[in-house]
Amino acid sequence: MAYWLMKSEPEELSIDHLAAEPRRLFRWDGVHNYRARNWMHDMAPGDRFFFAHSSCKVPGVAGVAEIAGEAYTDPTQFDPASHYFDPASKPDKPRWLSRDVRFVERFGKVLRLQELRPHAAALGHFHLLQKANRLSVMPVSDAQWHYVLALARREPTP
Image 1 (cartoon, rainbow, N blue to C red):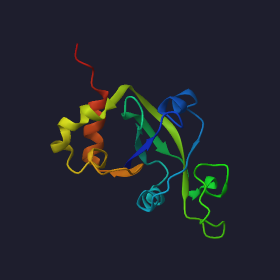
Image 2: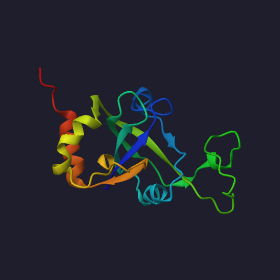
Image 3: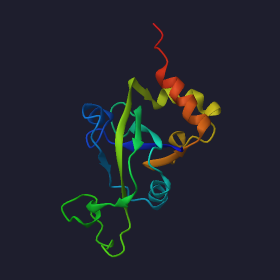
Image 4: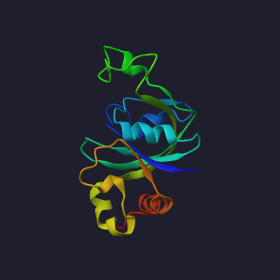
């Protein structure tokens, strides 16, 4: 099993959407970066990822979800009404992928980026904490996975 981190704007798709329908598969689409797309291609069914909220009031890691099924062509790239429309992508040679995902766990509270920053040394090259990182999909090492999971699950101190 590999581990990942995937970011979404909560207004579009959030951990709360997944938690509200835990058996439902949700399509993760709209990824238009080649590096992120290649990582989506490398994912396997059953891989887990941190579900991170971005471009919102409280950005951070909100829970865990898993990859359900194989990668497939992202239909939004062909839809002129979609803000993910890509006129250069052709049905016979699509550029972008989607993955189906499902709910695993919502954390008691969002593990905010400012709470993660003091742990940068322990996390090593954790993509989420890199200043120039705008990617919505990124790999997470086993050590990073377990470290962040422990931070997210710890009981808040009074």
